[in-house]
Length: 127
Image (cartoon, rainbow, N blue to C red; front, top):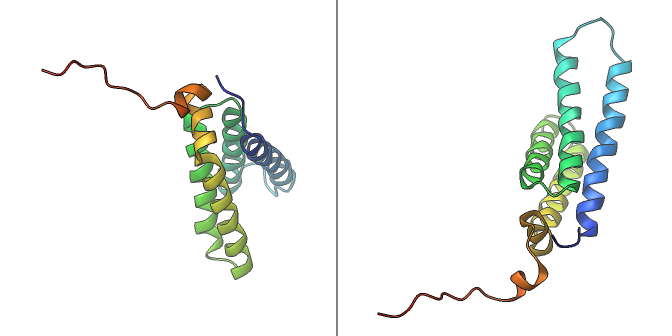
């Protein structure tokens, strides 16, 4: 497996930390013992944590989870202020760019540096 790109480390920690702080914040702000909206928000925060941890570990599905997570927040922020929409849109663009550029894609594939630089040759004999 090749070296983990710094961008993947940064984004992974961003999601783990924001998910953990958000979970703690929302869990302590509850008014009643069981609120359905709170359960959904806490579930979303757990998804951010899980996505961040598994992205750090190189799981390809986790980077897609993070992209879907931030996409949901872009859609949600479209119902709020323009500044919130712009901030989430910029975060979406950064996450998409850094998690899907060639170095990061190679990390998620588990490819070595040589297999990325060298084109694959077709060894089928000509008939």
